[in-house]
Length: 114
Length: 115
Image 1 (cartoon, each protein chain N blue to C red):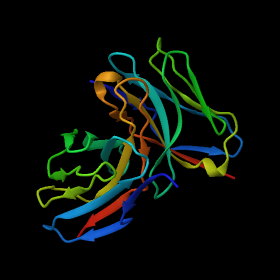
Image 2: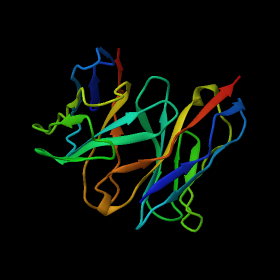
Image 3: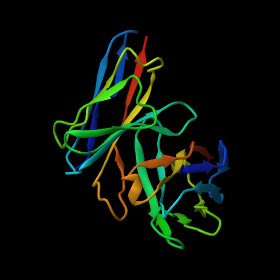
């Protein structure tokens, strides 16, 4: 079945540092890939998405590129801020047969210090 | 404003009682979903519904029940058969298209604590 593996956290960075959160996946067919962010005590917000190989999703300075050859969708940001502190989830939708169901990674906690 | 509302934000119940969590959306989405989130874990799918009056079990449906009588509403009942109900519950919805990208949007969640 479909699965998503994220790098284990927590990740602790200083403000303005470079961020990478690794995400790899296993899926049959042609999945769509997503990054969601969850701030403390809140629901999930869609951060970015990519629907086919070599697509790059981007939003709020975050980027991720859909790499089919390495089955990866790593999240990056060039300069993090304290306000980026949150839990980040990588997820996939396995395609037409999955009827919109999402498979999530376990989440990565990011803490950014001033 | 369009969105998904869940109520209440915090819910406390005694062991052995059934409890119903509310989820409403005004996005005109066909599909709705319920997830459970436990500390340090990803989200696990409880039930989902692609259309009114139809729903399917997700990965951890035991001890839960749902209904989908209206397009905008998808309440979740946590029954006394659920052995470990204390968790954060998240509702989501999506357009439900059978082809193309179907992005899910989430509500703010309900934190259920069983005493």
